[in-house]
Length: 281
Ligand SMILES: [Zn+2]
Image (cartoon, rainbow, N blue to C red; front, side):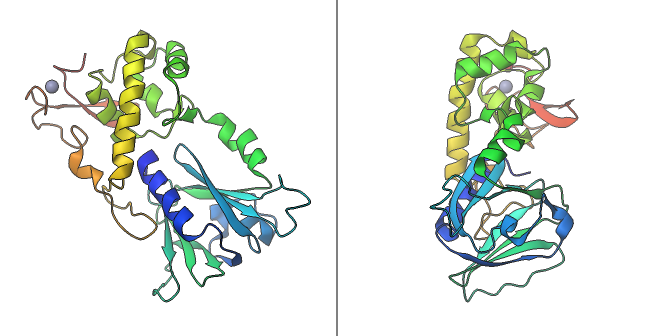
């Protein structure tokens, strides 16, 4: 599943390709993938792609209508969640593009390019909003702060409120938005924290370290194009490179890169979890 680094790479790809272009036509090939659709303008048909926002693993494509001078705040937007297998690929003019049964939405751009949302397993989806404010006040109000922006104080306050294992708390998008199974396992290993430690037992100092390591880990993963396990590709169809640097994720039974004990595999919140029982306390 794409997590923050992969989604951030998709956002950067969108900024480089669709932002600033007029969306001339939108073809919705599978209607039930879109929530809240009332009229074509909801899909930004006839709007300029003005901006890309991101909160955690969710993307907002913000459109600007022709009469925006009268109502500058009324910018329709589409929230896009890639789910497990979703992708947003941009095909520049001249590049062959053949939609298949899993291509659910295609935006046709004034420059001749096309942006395609494809999602074979359909755990992802699109949600339309009349304004960015509406998105922020509803769907995004349920999410915690973005993992690249949350402060140690804010995270410590959230962790203090839960007896759940730290891993479960970090996977919960209401605690902090953007982390999933890969980066939580890597992060907890990096911080020497055991995934089953209760959230409320994590000290202020440990949380400071956690936030520092989280930013460093995510920033490095973004720089390397994210992690590709099976499906993830960016807007140009390129796979990530960070999977080659995973220290514990997917490595159960192998030697711990720090102490050489064998990495253990457990289940936390129903998710396969790999950790080192000797160096994660
Ligand atoms: Zn170890």
